[in-house]
Amino acid sequence: RYGHSSPVRMLARIGSNAARCALRPTMVAARSAPAAMQRRGMAEEPKAAGGAIPAKLTLNLLAPHAAIFSKKLVDQVIVPGADGMFGILPGHVPTISELRPGTVEVTIATGEVEKYFVSSGFAFAHADSTLDVCAIECVKFEDLDPALVSSGKKEAEDELSRATDEVEKAKAQIAVEVYTAMTESLAAAK
Image (tube, rainbow, N blue to C red; front, top):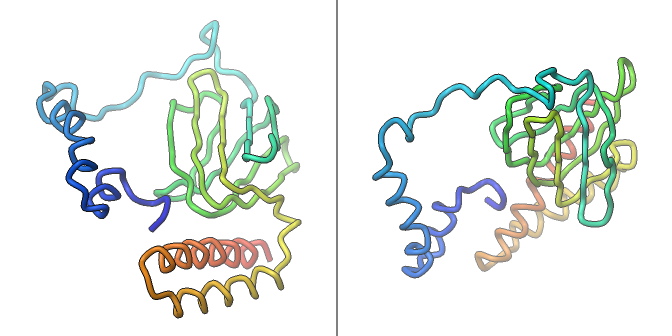
């Protein structure tokens, strides 16, 4: 599946000895690191400059074609992380998360919420209460046309059933996953 594999699994599928060798130094270093360095633990308490946690989160919502938000002060953002939906508030522990297709919900202020559909990307929560959401595609939720989403999903499913080689199958599978997520997002909003 596109966008949902670890680099190790992706390179293993490639089957190239040179590709697998590219990760060996990292793997060797991780295995030979002292046990204390390999253990995961709780992060330090987040602190902004001056030690206080800001009242607002600074959001940068970016797509290749535009900056949807640049340094926008918001209360909260909920993102579709690879392991499930999660919220980011001011003072969030620094985090990097891969995004799966789904809805990014931005709470600008109490009662003022904007929703965006993202196809994939990454979210970076920084210690200074800045959140960077970098999406491959980002569409304002109300701009999604349910009829076009439905016909696009059907077309993607048809392409998947007709696909003969691995590249065609992978492209069609990605399209099916994105259209399915759009359909689920639209259904949840009703």
